[in-house]
Amino acid sequence: MNTVGLVAFALVGSSKAIREEFDLFGIVIVGLAMAFAGGATRDLLVARVPLALQSPIEICLGLVGVGLAIGLNVVLSSPETHPVTLVSDAIGLAAFATAGAIVATEVGVSAFGVVAIATINAVGGGAFADILLDRAPFILFEDFYASCAVLGGSAYWVVGTLGATAGTAAAACAVVTVGTRLAAVTYGWNLPTAQNLELQRK
Amino acid sequence: MNTVGLVAFALVGSSKAIREEFDLFGIVIVGLAMAFAGGATRDLLVARVPLALQSPIEICLGLVGVGLAIGLNVVLSSPETHPVTLVSDAIGLAAFATAGAIVATEVGVSAFGVVAIATINAVGGGAFADILLDRAPFILFEDFYASCAVLGGSAYWVVGTLGATAGTAAAACAVVTVGTRLAAVTYGWNLPTAQNLELQRK
Amino acid sequence: MNTVGLVAFALVGSSKAIREEFDLFGIVIVGLAMAFAGGATRDLLVARVPLALQSPIEICLGLVGVGLAIGLNVVLSSPETHPVTLVSDAIGLAAFATAGAIVATEVGVSAFGVVAIATINAVGGGAFADILLDRAPFILFEDFYASCAVLGGSAYWVVGTLGATAGTAAAACAVVTVGTRLAAVTYGWNLPTAQNLELQRK
Image 1 (cartoon, rainbow over the protein chains, first blue to last red):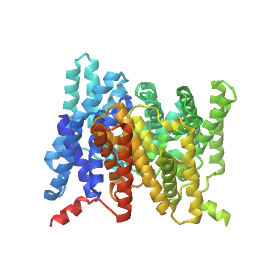
Image 2: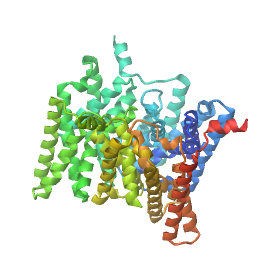
Image 3: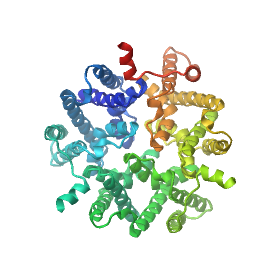
Image 4: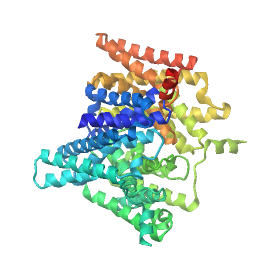
């Protein structure tokens, strides 16, 4: 799952950079940033040297995603909205949220910390990529995306607290994240804004 | 003071996100980012696991601020410029600058390090919230805001170096920060730009 | 070399902030961010307290660069494109890339980690300054700048792996970085975008 996620995240990040007419260096950096910045932020928060700097295999997977983005850009007009990409992205979201929840539990943070680190691991890369592209991170104002990681991280904590093994908690986190994400894509879910809430009240 | 600061900072951050029509997730994240990113950056710089991830009570205070922003948004047009908010924000600025100066002194950095960490703790959250909102951080070009934290951090270092106890230094930092900030709000202080300096010379 | 780099980077950062009409606090912060954010990020990645917070001399050098930017702004219309600044900036790029490669080797990361930390140390400050100025980091879409640090970091790793001493590897890194950077400025090198690549194929 982690493999699929790294390739899919790098592909989405690079595709965004290509659309902004960044040069090759920019395309590689935004792709790798999207794939690795979430995990690196997680490692910073728990005071570790980021794994991505130690594992050459993971970087190669990221570069495969960057290469795919450049290759597919010739064939497809927007490879990052292709159904295969959307499903891979959902799998990556779940894999990263689960990895975050596991690391957070190991270092012994609060329930909020577990959910926060799971979410940061899952969506931090995308948010950082958007900042590099000089945009507000899209997770903050549209789509039902980061919320899936929040639900997944919460599921991890609830299942773990109920006494289940770490493996069961991880499975629950992955299933909840990927399930809610695919449902959100299929049915076009969105969270309301404060303006929507007021309108509904009137 | 820390309590007032957390609520006020989360309230200001969330109010900005509401104005940008971010969705509920975005409103929560920008509010919490404004309240906690400064302290988290401080903890990263001194190589600690951020306290905010370990203390559920602090997170609840941040969420109170987020809730207030959503609630007040219906009643007031811009709750973050209300006098009560401005005073609470000044108290928060002082509380966060003092907390930063204390932590920096504990890890034994230089005088510059003490002032830098006090300032980052106090204004880092607001700067990060502005980046999430795709703006240049407002502290860099208007208002007399971060400068209050710089003065407070300097006061901490000067008083501490003169041989006073940590408690006296902390009090000096808090008084200087909140005092200069309230004066700045009252009298509309601004730092000059390089362009202003040239004009004055002519 | 490090001295020249700190002054040059702070000068370039502050000049950008002056052009955006930031106030004095903003000019100081963007200049110091450009000079120190790359090294601070390196230290965060390897879980150290940033050196810049412990060494008052380095900060003074940064402030000299800030002062130069304010002073030169009156005499020259854009001091950051003056040949002396461009050469100093290239020297700084090389000094910072070399420092990054040395620290990365000490903590024992992979080959990719060495190149990544060298590059982040060299160009992270400039990228962070651009984010503070609410721009996409210029290294991502124009000029042949970060690529020089990538080549320098790679040279460090190749020479080191071939069995040379750390001093020789550092010299190779510095020579490659400053050489390719000066060549890039002289001949106006640019990396292609994905759009260029497609056009060339047609």
